[in-house]
Image (cartoon, rainbow over all chains, first blue to last red; front, side):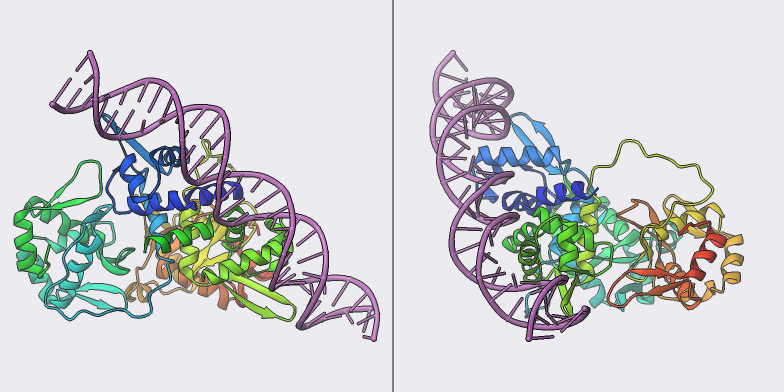
Amino acid sequence: MEDQFIKTATLIGDPTRAAIMWTLLDGRAFTATELAIVANTSPQNISMHLTKLLEGDLLSVEKQGRHKYYRFSNKEVAYAIEAMANLIPKPEIRLKKEKDTYPPIKYCRTCYDHLAGKIGVALTDSLLEQKIILNTNDTFQISSEGEKWFSDFGINIEEAQKQKRIFLKPCLDWSERRNHLAGSIGALLLNKMITEDWLRKTKNSRAIIITGKGEKELLKYFKIVV
Amino acid sequence: MEDQFIKTATLIGDPTRAAIMWTLLDGRAFTATELAIVANTSPQNISMHLTKLLEGDLLSVEKQGRHKYYRFSNKEVAYAIEAMANLIPKPEIRLKKEKDTYPPIKYCRTCYDHLAGKIGVALTDSLLEQKIILNTNDTFQISSEGEKWFSDFGINIEEAQKQKRIFLKPCLDWSERRNHLAGSIGALLLNKMITEDWLRKTKNSRAIIITGKGEKELLKYFKIVV
DNA sequence: CGAATACTTCAGTTTGTATTTAACTATGAA
DNA sequence: TTCATAGTTAAATACAAACTGAAGTATTCG
């Protein structure tokens, strides 16, 4: 078992391959050429590395015409890379921006079934600021005003609470190193935004597209600039 | 941020250093010489690698006389290594042992504040088998007999349920790849066993020692052979 | 169809970094 | 004191594995 672990560790621990994994963490699927560009190397070389990652079962491919789309083969891989990203030494000073809107969204992805990425964090911040949810020592709770807010928004909280899965929990986002909403509430919010066509899921990827309607509504409800 | 990630990945991704991390995952603190032995290399070499891991803030040291004890510098490191260990390709066939006791414990460690390692898994299995807890699609629940059992055991469930933290949840163990008890119940069980002197915490490590009394009681209550 | 793009394969070269050899300091035991 | 053990440092060496160049296949597009 030890050698197996060493194999996996050395597989991830090559500069070019680590760059690949880092890029794929964004949730989208990338072509070999795209990965060669971001990893700053030749097509031949990236091809070799991608083969190794495939053999190690860390990635999966899908062929579309003359393109090959690579992405993580399963969520455990994403978890591992996120956990590793979490070990990056923290910057000393965090610049605290005093603005009344949240910074523009660079990308938008789902953390398996709830919203993560910059939008997930911004959304969570906004919910906290509006006191819709409350943070008491890293546990989220819905306030009494929040209960009204969710029902106005069209989400039935009682039903969510009945579900087996954990109702409401924070989930550390690697890119922002801040908590965003997970649990069934996170999933319900995501779902609602998709049915309302604020957001659309993309095929074969964890990435999410923001519609024109979504852009307006996100600004209105959450002061998020897309 | 990308280069930082690459640095971390390559730091872990050297065979000798990966072997070190794998060894330390057990929770105990090891001396440089011990690590050289398990990693199958020379003292000079292990010294070089340990220096790099210290510089990367992945490990911390404590000097005791002429010995230096190395261990993970924080829990995030353990999380990351566990997440990586989770990527190891699963063995095709799982040998299912049909015994009426659980296999001997090789080591015993806490997963931050609940019992993990072989003993944690064996304990959870035993609780499941005795129908003290029930597993319904990867969510644990306490049965009605279980409620009585816990109160007989000296654990007040009602109080635990009032706590903010998640009451009862499974936690995937890297070594056994099986769920064990986390949440407040896991912590309470661990605590109880410590106050009853079945188990003792060791200084400077996540490892746990089983006392003579504990050995008898674990067999009696849970059919666990230590 | 031919030309361009996307990707792969293979053989040869380079290079980064792990390891070895050797000499040194510090602590503990006899 | 003297010897043994624990660990470090520095320079020289070795080597695996990444990379390069050249040539190949497959697909799309005009």
